[in-house]
Image (cartoon, rainbow, N blue to C red; front, side):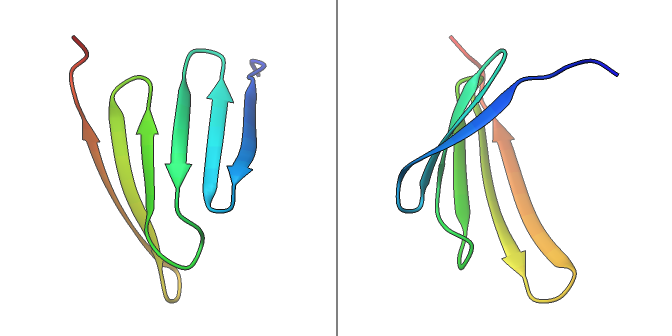
Length: 65
């Protein structure tokens, strides 16, 4: 099993900075509503927990210039 590096910092209430070996991302939102994640690789994800065993996620990847 390979070793990985991942670290998450809470910089403000509802805002997290996520770091891993090759990129970083910023997540805005708490657990009571939608969460928006913007990654340094160009990926943007909107996710939300729904009641019960359900969840919703929409991911859009943009090209880097």
